[in-house]
Length: 76
Image (cartoon, rainbow, N blue to C red):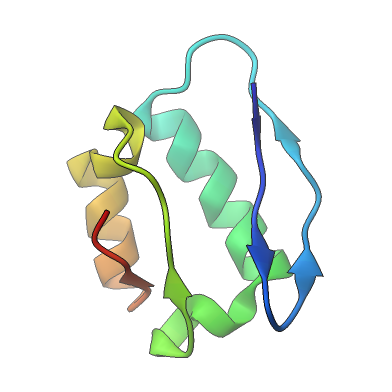
């Protein structure tokens, strides 16, 4: 499994390989590093992040982090 992100502003970022099952903690580890490095416009509400309704995406740990960083997430 891989995770990736694209944006109108920055284009395609590199893929992150996921070993094993993706849970909320692993997903948060991936987005915490990758979004800041490759998609900094998300911080502070400059852009909207879109994700699916997969269980790791909806984990309270992840949602709390998005709220803390003022990253707007599109309802899926």
